[in-house]
Length: 377
Image (cartoon, rainbow, N blue to C red; front, side, top):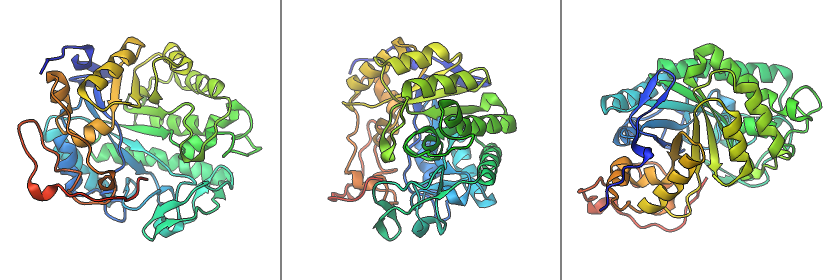
């Protein structure tokens, strides 16, 4: 093993929060919550195992019942949710870690079979694919177009969810405006057909994301709020249109608010969009790359390229799933555990979740199960 001493392992800082390294655990939906969205003790174990990350951004958590996407995802809009998350943050803090919570509303990425409610969206344009529910894959339903009152209520729900997150022990929150969920649906031309002040022009389409972020910042302090975007991302049937105009406009509106960070998903140091984000954003940028090769050398190669392009922190997803001690492995140049069958990503239970071994340890033989197929949400 060759020990690495790159900038990845240098201390970093967010407003009011010191980080021991530049390595961030990206938010990763794992479907291990109770049916009502309450986090579980198993989740506390999972996150505590990964507390050596410079920062953990916990998985997407819904600010209201309408925002639920898939079964057993987390929520943060009831006292039970707050209490469940407090178990998680206490466990991580006891292990020396720090956590933000991602706030996500699914918008049209939802189903009555899961939430009991008709999903809402900027316009009545359904998801162009099936969606996983407790009853298996079901055709997507046509979402209800949000009224002006719906928009005001949802903005307020995000702000209340942010307050709940801090009450649950998180150091801050991340507003999710990416990956084809509600805020991203307002940004995209093919899902936002509105003709009022929230649709049409670039200025109008960024308005909802901006208002949610501003309301959350007003509730808990801008230095405790990050924003996640994924320019050009087409997941969940998104076609943005005018990507090169949308994100500079959004950054211009929010760049002077003193936010903790801008989190850029699908980050590529060679794209013009990333360069423009870096040039325009006055604060910390977290870059979350897509990795072609999940190996120690592959992670170092991509991370160092993004740091050289101006990223301040590097968020990694899949490497953290299989490597609870990822920071140690990367620092020592040690090989990474392989991510087992993707079936385990979303099925619940400890298998493929808390049973990946740290360096020098071996999994128990009954924790290695070979299964074929399964869903990937």
